[in-house]
Image (cartoon, rainbow, N blue to C red; front, side):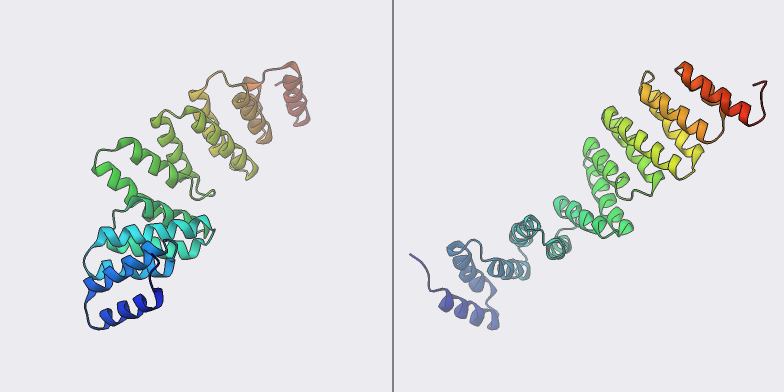
Length: 245
């Protein structure tokens, strides 16, 4: 039988004013059981559980609301609730990941990294090596301009056995670094890729392109895989005045 929601709310508010938190909780439980998607009531219930020292029950309410907000694309509101959860339970892994994702979307990479580092340390502490490596890989993927962190993420992928993912990331990094004129770093990424997959023709091709772009014709010649590439190297060297080479 449906409850009289207005009367129940009035009674709950009266009990809160009287400091009768447990009785107020009972009233709000009736409300949310009657209307499971009454998010405002669930939020108040979560706050009351928090005041009553029932952190787990408070977190349960907040997670449900935050997940719903996230599903609806209301990331800022969801993030506020996940942060609320972390005040009650700093080791709540789902909230750490969700807050980190929102911070990353806002390009607040240092703050996102702090949350993921806390997650990684939690997993390390309980002996969850793979989970810790997954968190480490997420840290590496935060800032596309932080190539040192991305290399750390590659190492985590390799350690997890995700060689295909590591190889793809190394190739992508190499292309970006080459476009930025950071030849030495591009070469280092490609050499790492070559150690993962020595027979990868695409890696050899990319190395050739990087060396040619940097006018490093000696190494370009070593990476050449076709007569046409060797002719291009020869023409470049001749154009640079090094006919003997």
